[in-house]
Image (cartoon, rainbow, N blue to C red):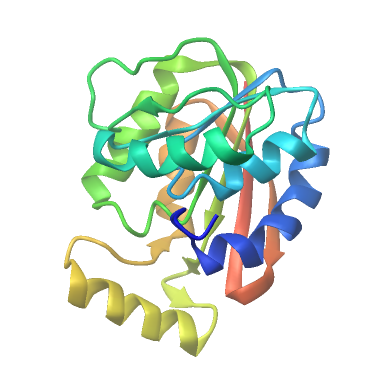
Length: 198
C-alpha cells in the first residue's frame, strides 16, 4: 500500500463527491473519468457505484500508477485505464453516458480544455451526464482569497494553467449540447458542476 501513488486532496474530497455522484449518476451505465491521477477516485467511486462501469483514463505516462492501485484495490466494475490525451483527434471510447473529471481543467491549458469539450461532443450519448470538480471563478472573481492564491501558484508553475471562469467553461459545454443541471458548493472552496446533454 505504501508504494502506491497517493493524493491527499483525492482522499479528502472522495466522500463528498460520491454523495452527489450517487444521485446524478443513478441512471448511468458507463462513466469515463478524465485525468484519473492516482486511481483513488476510480477505486472509491467504483465501490460506491456498483451499478455502473467506471473507465479510468489519463496520459500514457501516468497509467502505471493507476494500474498499480487498481490491481491492489479496484472492484470488478472498474476497467483497466485507457491512455487518453484530450488533444487526440479520436478518443479510444464511444457511446459514453457519464463523464467525470476532478482537478483537471485548471491544470490543462485553455486550448486543452477546449479540446476536451470538443472530444466529449464526439463520444457522449444523448442524455449523458458530465461532472467537473474543482475551483472556478464567477463573473471574473475568485470565490475565496485562497483560490486567488492557488491561481498565482498554478501560473507560476505553468503560465497556461489557472482557475477557470465558470462562464467560459459553461459556454464550451453549451456548444456541445450540454445544459447545466446543478452547481454544488463543495469542501475546500471547490465546486461540482453537473451538465446533461440534450
